Image (spheres, rainbow, N blue to C red):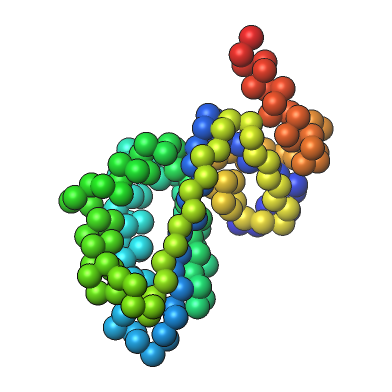
Length: 164
């Protein structure tokens, strides 16, 4: 459902933004990139079925370079999931290293950002709930949340108020 109003999202406490993706370098080698492409949906299914693992929400875009943005409750949970032997991630990572390694057919990448409470801002207009707006709570971007600078100041003020 598209929400036409100006909204901003918040999430209590610290959280992690994890960007991950793949790049098909040799499109004709379907047998190389298809297993990589099909691994992530299995991981997401597992993560959504087990909320205690820490994934809050994920969004994905497809193309020659595929990107997914994930929101996690903590760095500890993200790192712990990567090491669970019985989970989907570790076997997929081992299969990638065995089948592809550094042969150049498929690229993979990730970036991880630890976000401190109050150290982010966002706005959504004419959008369905999206990104942090799906992981957190949406509220009107009015008053002390009108501009990006206001949202940063407002979060900083809320943090200092909470410390009192």
